[in-house]
Length: 124
Image 1: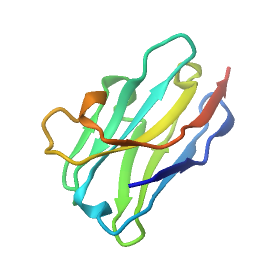
Image 2: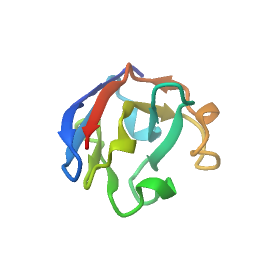
Image 3: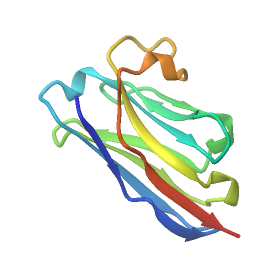
């Protein structure tokens, strides 16, 4: 699976952005999908994950109530809707695909494929 993230940019605090991740291949629906982010000088951290058919979503506490994840298996797409953005959300955002089960989707080590990242900058 090859992943291509897009949609990043500069936004003011309180604003919103929608990131997209396009996946290649005909087996996209078999993968649990996640979004991670990495701020300068910090480790890559979990943001959200969605199961193969979209029936379960996992959130990091820091984004609960503001961000949501969705997927369209017919289009091989996964989305990250980010609302009420804060300066601390500034980071490079990565989409990732996990071939295994749901256990451990908050962990980077569970993911087999990564996109190249898209930069989100939130100004105060």
